[in-house]
Image 1: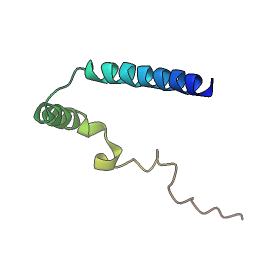
Image 2: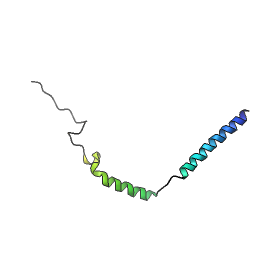
Image 3: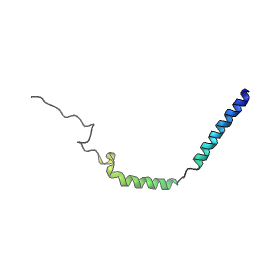
Length: 72
C-alpha cells in the first residue's frame, strides 16, 4: 500500500513539474540586445526624475541634518 501511495505522490509531483515547464516554455521572450536597448531608452527618458542622478532638494530631503534651535 505504501508503495502505491509513493507512486501516486511521484505522479502528482511530476505532473506539477510538467505544468510549470509548459508555463515557462510559453513565456514570450525577447533578445538580450533588444532588452538592453529598451532599458537604455527607459533610463535616458526618466533620468531627469531620478534622485540619484539629479539630487534631492534640501527642502524635500527627510535625512538632512536638523537645524539647530536656540532658545533665548
